[in-house]
Length: 251
Length: 89
Image 1: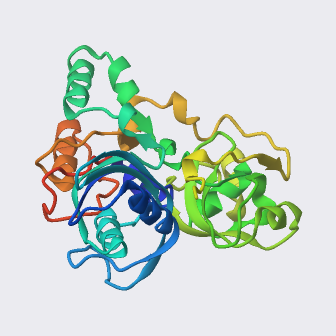
Image 2 (image 1 turned 135 degrees about the horizontal axis):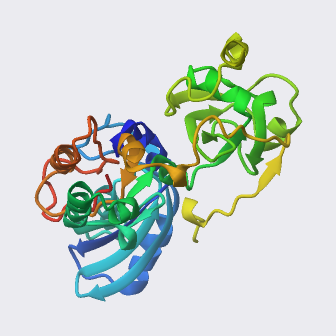
């Protein structure tokens, strides 16, 4: 993430991850048993973060969307897991080992997806370096523009609300988004969901926590729809109608 | 059992109030210049083995001469795993 784009990091934590992992079992287990363990550890699971973790070590709920066995060789099991951000796959392997009664550990891991970003569409440092050199030396930005994406690429998978021009600057100043400032809203938003607030030009304004469901937002004539948690768009990108700024600017 | 991950979600949009947007303010993401992207952009980067995500973010920051570069976060720290997970900056 570049420049102010670093502010979009929370979007990826709320958009799911996909990994390919190699689990080594400490005993002989038939395929069916492994599949049973995969099934058992699908859905909402409790996880205590590992000893060496960046977060507090207390049990927390994480969602495993799927566990798939890719290949099996002796005590090694190659698998693919889709899960919510903050799921420790190392811990998942350990816990599956306990469930199977033989013990297990994670041998290798590769993340193949972080929210909307997939391994197939990733670029190497060298790609970036060459594109940058092209741009700097000959002013040719073609390659660079294929590699650097707008910050909005991060919010591809988040539920979104699109707001009126007149509502943008207040949110940029940290105010809650009022329901009357909403033009369009995605269906399926529930209270408490992490959402992206967008302009009608598809620009990312801010992230927040939904205070109303999609249905409530559509019907509301007053009240706050989103509690603004993090602002990404710089202030004064849109006129500040809310403090009479538009009149000043246009007169 | 298989649950739909966020990348399988197919949301629909509902209109609360039809509105136009004033072309004088803001800019659609796809029409931004390199300079604008450098101050508000992302690169889906395949992190090489070896250096930490922090170190790679630092390299990118120096290369592009941007004030800030960060990464989307890897979950496991401290070189516990010989093959670091791919990291997206």
